[in-house]
Length: 135
Length: 135
DNA sequence: AATATAATAGTAATAATTCCTATTTTTATT
DNA sequence: AATAAAAATAGGAATTATTACTATTATATT
Image 1: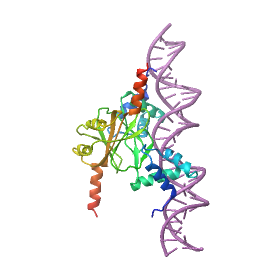
Image 2: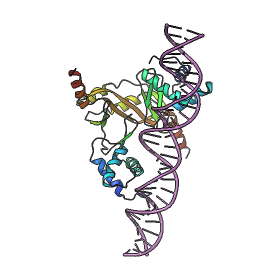
Image 3: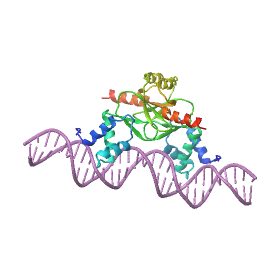
Image 4: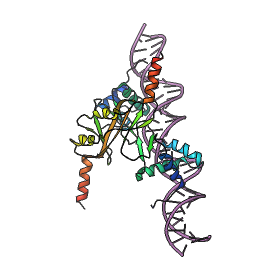
């Protein structure tokens, strides 16, 4: 049961901390694999899950069918672009009150909420308006 | 391209309209299969996706790795119980303002948000406190 | 150094969902 | 009612993300 140190886990965490684009498990694998060629995909999955269970990273489910991971565990929200799929941190005021609003007329215990926003990111918006004006 | 009528699709929609528990594709299959024994699982999946694309039903992704479906397309929010997995409609005031809050300092276009709440449902809360007081 | 145990690599298995194709249904037209 | 065109189906194969299995290796403890 006692946790043992592993180079693979260190590299996975370190890689994730150096990124702000919320990569998926296979992106983590592809990158760590460059510096540590015989790491296995199973090890990446196992450690991402372990780190998430320990609370050292966060697992993001953003409706695209693949889990994303984030080394930033501070409370914040995400935007996923419907065009290019990129995941972006949102700087925004707190919306924590929604848990109270939801619990006002409910007989269970609300522990929390999952929220993410979607639409067209800044880059894709620019590309679209450029393509439009070119016609 | 023109849509053609099918008994299978009717039965799937009808079944879904008679339920308020947001079943998954295989639950839909298991039930419709009773009255229409040679319907295939692929047909259930295809029609659920088609109906969702047409906007006649809603596809719910609630973080449990399986898609749920809801015949109620009016805007409302869901609660998923971490104990028993049941999905419950929430009657609550609007939280639509969160889209504006999120968009205040963002350079893309926010089209909408996905929010669901989790915790312990009323039933499971009762069971827990009963088990606790029995000690 | 010896031992115990956690972690790994590599592969097999699982689960949800989508894809494929020959056949059947539906719908429009005669 | 018969014909023809297109959509939908059944059944099974394929895909994708993820987890499980197991013999071997790495880590930590005495």
